[in-house]
Length: 102
Picture 1 (tube, rainbow, N blue to C red):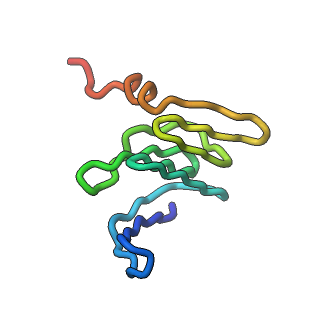
Picture 2: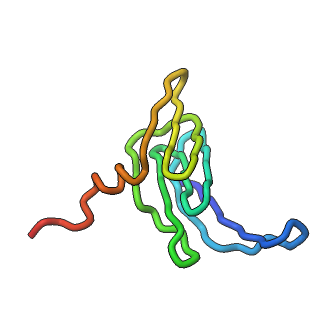
């Protein structure tokens, strides 16, 4: 398991400030994409985070690793080899149960 870190800076000449650490399991390849309040980190799985009140919270985990990611708003393109997969993050979040039925 390896660590990924989030730093923040307001201006280009400002020293980045540490915000948050993530433990992302990965074998060999790690890729990421960031657009606004959505962050995608690839490892052994694909981890999708959203920013809430200044903290990044994991909202979705895809069970497959991909080689590279391109993120635009709520649309995610993921590549594996020469195949391209498209995801709508809002649709993925709605498909995941938020609580266990009683």
